[in-house]
Image (tube, helix red, strand yellow):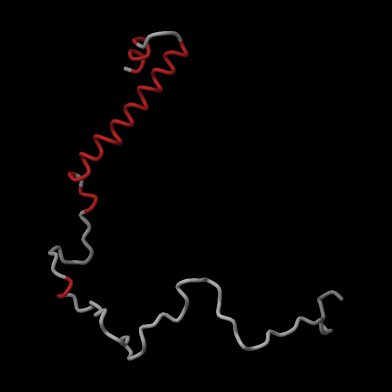
Amino acid sequence: MYRWIWRKLPFGFWGKLTSSLALSAGTVALLWYVIFPWATPLLPFDDVQVGSDTQQGSAREDPNVVDPSAATGPNGGSNEIPYSTVSNAPDPTSTKTPSSHKTSSSVVLPGD
């Protein structure tokens, strides 16, 4: 089939090469912008069900649903996030960092 297409394309080698690349790009564009969007609703890729039941119920039936209006967490604690959601920089601490000074330690290495 490809040999037949190659023979039917006009011009010499470079013209045939350019024409075949244009035909390939046109085929890909047709599939990408026309055929695939048309076929997407017909394909089952978005029909995802999690759990053992196949029936889908409302979220209110789930015993694990978290009430967003609750002021405390499950253990009575606060629902505040213990870290910054704005920056990755840690909060400065009030303790002094140990100074880096060399201490002489007696380390015995094997073979010494």
